Image 1 (tube, rainbow, N blue to C red):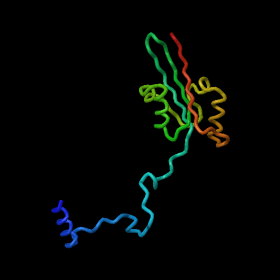
Image 2: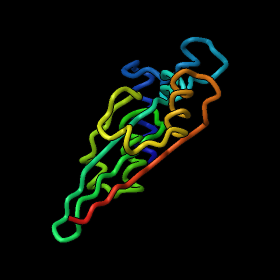
Image 3: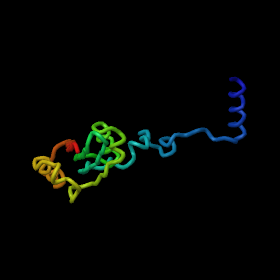
Image 4: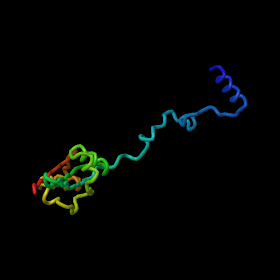
Length: 140
């Protein structure tokens, strides 16, 4: 330990190394700099996402899964789907942002849910969060 201290003193005396200064010391600011997360852009606003996946299991029939919800990004919505459907189906889901035409949306999404999502997109009387799932199963 003493050898390290002696080497540091020798380096400072010979000016081979400058003392470490924080950003606040260099700029004269009394406030410490924020972390990268604190100074980065604000998180994106929630958007409406729709997702669907089809599951065909021999001997068990055909199941169509549909989901609608609010999330900041597609990966967040897939995480929501994984909690309901499992990771394999969530990874294979077809996902789209917005309420435009989407396969099976008219069949699988009830009008009250569609109305809530339309209000969210227009910014009027919108819910704080929403995650809707529906499953249609046929045994063929």
